[in-house]
Length: 182
Length: 64
Length: 385
Ligand code: HEM
Ligand code: SF4
Ligand code: SF4
Image (cartoon, rainbow over the protein chains, first blue to last red):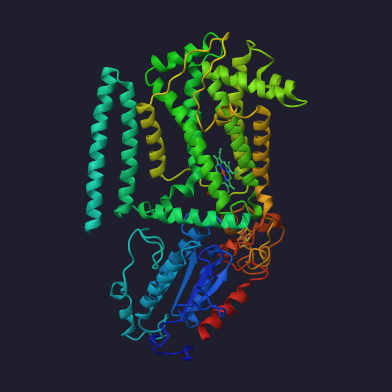
């Protein structure tokens, strides 16, 4: 196990970036996707935390994860419009947008925070989306929060356009970068 | 403009033209007492506008 | 068995959604708006119905001719009549879609029994309104429907005669029949709104209208159909002779068609069983969250000391389970000093979704068995692994 906590280096270690995901009980079924310890079967660098509804997530928890060593965080709910609890996923979608804007002002790359929307049986598509998200985060330099005194090099991480990895497809549901086409 | 967007623009233009033709048809129906035709054409216009909205959205010209 | 069936139907439903998503963006999926579409058709029905009412004369000798006059001589009368007829069919179709969708996606669970039960009432009333609507035209079909209904009602044991009297004002055709039918058409239609009020009590921000794409589509489709397949009456009713044929509108008149093969009493029993089962659906699977394999996080709790009375949780709770009450005293934290209100959870309505937790910016709400502390712990373990 590489020691990832408190590391100063870019998180492009052998296991990829550390990612924490919040997964709604009613969205993607976790059987076959998640292992007993909460990591994803195909992506051991991603840990999923099951929650009763995506709308349960406090944006502060996402920030908490980023401040405590996660390189990326996301929330996954049902497809927009089909929330079992009516609007939970719309609510968290909006809140993630706000958090992204807020953290961008603190020089955090907003692409590190994602909102995904996949239904119960869309496990495969969900795994693909998380993989794409993970690869995108892997391409970002440095820890999520820049060091206290911003070195001139880290300011270059701002432009999202320079991020490698597949660009999200317009119109497709639940592109990892949050609410597509909105 | 991307390729996809311009395809949708094309569709929007076609549908808008259909709407225009229908308007002419409604006026003609009104003048000559063909109310049933006028009614049907109102339906066509509404359907055309429905698909225009869809194309606007899919082409990325409007958001949610 | 039933559970397996339901799981299969859910899979099919979600499959359908992914197919629709190929053409329509997620927030345009019409199946997410079946309730709103029902309301749209209901509104169209009310508006076109008012127009028809202005021309309709409820009497034996004028009912038929007033409808004919409206259709043939009033400008666009034909169109409005068609809109009313086809919207009724559309209404029934989207209500059934609404019912099946909510059923298969298990949206009858937990505190959703209230919308479900009131929904069954809405469905039953709608069927009734549809039938009385066909009776108003007073063509041969209307007469057949009245005769068949009266006959079936009279056969119900014990209350049969009374039932027929209640519906039609006595045996045979009395002069009051058509005014009575007019009431039986419009009265229950007003009743729909009473049940809708109930339908919405536990639903926060109900999606009452579909997106514009589908409003235009539904209206356009109905109007186009009206132009292409104009609505007509059959030959006028001739009281002396029983008509032999029945043009069937399958959405409303199937039971009358079935009367050819089954005695009316069997059909009535069948209807009672179906409606009874419909009312039973929310209680058929009395599963708790842990039985469903979900974590039982407990009913949300307000931490009164922190609550500022900002009402955010109240706006976001999907089931109207939070009420704001006047606060007798300030809270403990600084932000809670000036509060006028505080949040109170109606525990019987809470489904433990935790949306209020995500809504509260003042850390004044928690799910007792899934605290913020627990989440923090899990996040830390995840980050350190
Ligand atoms: C006149 C007919 C009806 C109308 C106009 C109507 C309208 C609506 C509307 C607007 C909603 C809110 C939907 C949303 O915001 O997602 C809703 C929810 C609901 N309806 Fe109906 N409805 C009708 C009939 C029915 C019937 C026949 C049933 C089933 C027996 C039913 C069961 C439900 C349930 C369970 C919900 C809650 C769904 C949720 O919370 O997402 N409704 N209805
Ligand atoms: S957990 Fe909160 S938002 Fe969910 S039903 Fe209960 S009170 Fe409402
Ligand atoms: S959101 Fe929090 S602070 Fe605001 S009223 Fe609800 S419990 Fe109180």
